Image 1: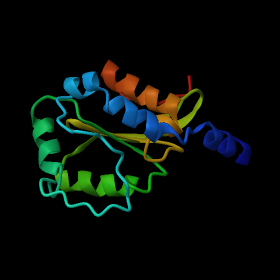
Image 2: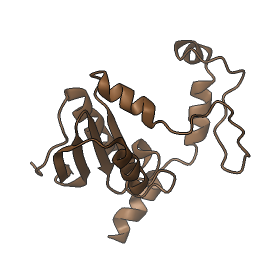
Image 3: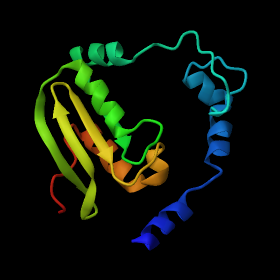
Length: 160
């Protein structure tokens, strides 16, 4: 078990922030994103944020999207200390939407990839063994989640 964990950590590229910064500072990328920043920088937890335009909650936006026929999926790595699964669950509870598909384990490459629950116009998926940047920690599982979303279906409920 420890061997798999060590392998996962060794595959994580610590220079990811440098690649992201280089990409997001490319003029063509900034233009396509309609970004008007002189230089994009990775957030630093040590910084003292003073975001005057930061909304108190994104729940009203999520609720509006849910009512507009847009498929809304929230996902979270189950080892993410920044946005824990329980925090997302508490937020969803505040939306007061009924469960349509109860929690179940979904599978990726023959093993549990995480869990999923379907609400009215909202899906919540966890990605097992992943931290905050799910594509970096669990690329195959994250791809399975994104593919399921794009295909308009829940992740698979059996290890086929």
